[in-house]
Amino acid sequence: MKRSKSPCIGVCEFSHQNHWCLGCGRTRKECQQWKAMKPYARNIFLKELHKRMVQIKKKTKNSLIGLQRSEWSQELTLNTSDSKPQQN
Image 1: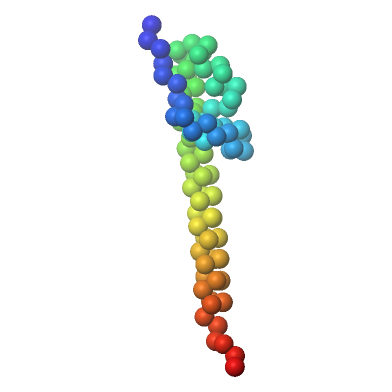
Image 2: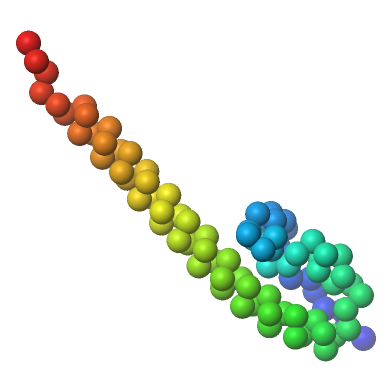
């Protein structure tokens, strides 16, 4: 029987609010259980992982957009404070 390749991409960062890996979407427990899963269960689980990764990417994208806005706001504040006319 052909072995199903693990969804792991080597990122292994479990910082999402649901303790999902940012790389593959699995929890630590699910990573440990992967080898013992039957092929049918893996296929169902892979569909669930796809949905999770969509959620993670949306969340990450929104976080990055917020970060970029924050950086832009800070830069704007710095630039405007640098351009204030000097008083003699």
